[in-house]
Length: 310
Image (cartoon, rainbow, N blue to C red; front, side, top):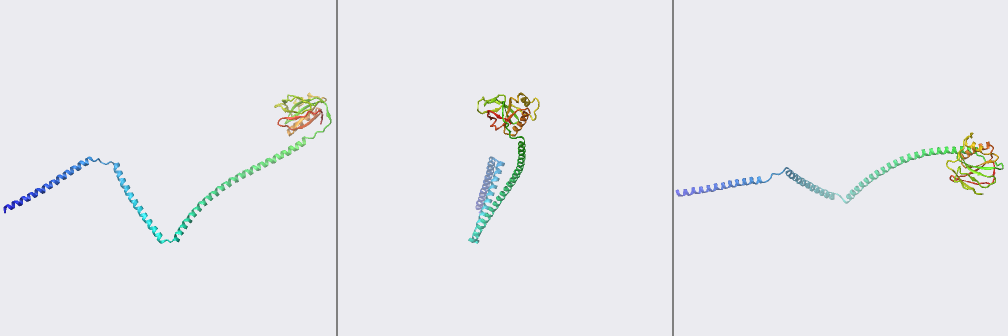
């Protein structure tokens, strides 16, 4: 009996030794794991703030994408349900009505656009009309001014015609005049000495004092003369002692000389001729007058064999 008791106690001791060894191994393994973990943690670098922020942002974006994907799926499902309900509850006539309603709305929108365009065109036309009205009023005002100028010019023409009719008369021929002819050109308000013609001669001796480029004397042929720029003398309103006309009539003799006036066909020339003629007649000279039409600045002179004085 005692022997059996010893065997049982030995078995218990062995069991206790085994359990202790197991727990000791577990404790040793735990210590090794903790030491290994701490060593690994020491080798792993700590994450940076930027990496942490990017990781958080990536998680947020994944979550947002999943949420939007779910919402899109829900909307697609709702669309399919609405389409199915529409197909189930709508007849072909209703579809045509819906299409007609859509086209009608498009037509209304198009009409609104056309109305706006038409209103813009009307506004532009009104602006153009106002501008044209202003131009028309300006043109009418200018026309009235021009009409006034025309009336004023017509009055001046009437006055000049009346003055010309009072100042100009047809010459009265009194017979052949004898002596040496002194030719004078009356152009504007100036008189130019042309030259002289001997008694009974056909040709005209052109002087170079008042004539530019005087032509040579040619028998029985006309000559063309051009007044020299700055030549001649101004015919005075009233002849005074010592002026150009007074010196001229005193240089000639009524018994030997007479005047031939070549008068240009304009009012200033005829007025100057009237003044010159009055001084010549007052001094007892005979005179002959011819109206000439200048071509440019030149006139043509015909050297007549004889003259009939006025």
